[in-house]
Image 1: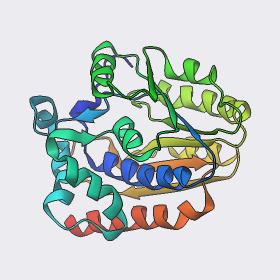
Image 2: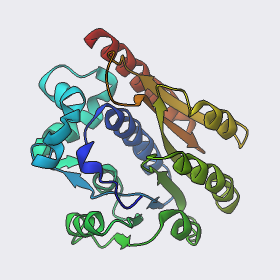
Image 3: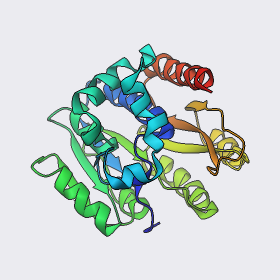
Image 4: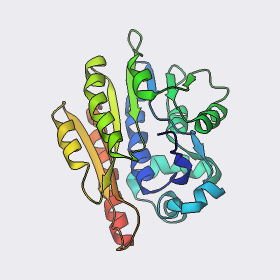
Length: 262
């Protein structure tokens, strides 16, 4: 939706799970023999200042990445945390910046972002990187028009806002089209875990579409908390087998870490 701006939520607990797992999946893909073609359908602005007014309005990063930066992060997150700590709180890497840092010079990248302000910020954040093409267009429609070149490994990240039930319905319609369009691609979907369990039926549906790895973690939610989310998950079709164990370790260690902080 055009009203959504991720800067209000950047670095929160959902981001921690998402980016920790994405870091592992991208490193595994980059270690393969094929050049990469990386696509994001909902890119956001790429980089985030966790100290600015937008981020501080909700303060969601306090219990997320900032707590990990100030304390002792679970060891399975060490690779991703090295990058985050090197950048600092004023340059927190969203998924586009993470891909930019991890993918080799031979990679191609197409980033979709429809929101005018977010697109402008993304364009500025990625400026000077000839590997990257930014599209101000609907990511679902635009991505399906793309195809890897001969020999390329396609990696697609889908990270919508899920502000309404329609967002889940749109992804439910899009995912089988994507799997048919790109057999052999690494297709990564971020999925919030809601307190009312509304994502359960969608998760069961995804399991019918093919073999997928699912890495999720929940956190305790205090009574009276306004947030409808109590966890985060990444669903990966076509992931390298060697990525399973480290991604599972990230999810398990985070769930234990957050449980201990309750």
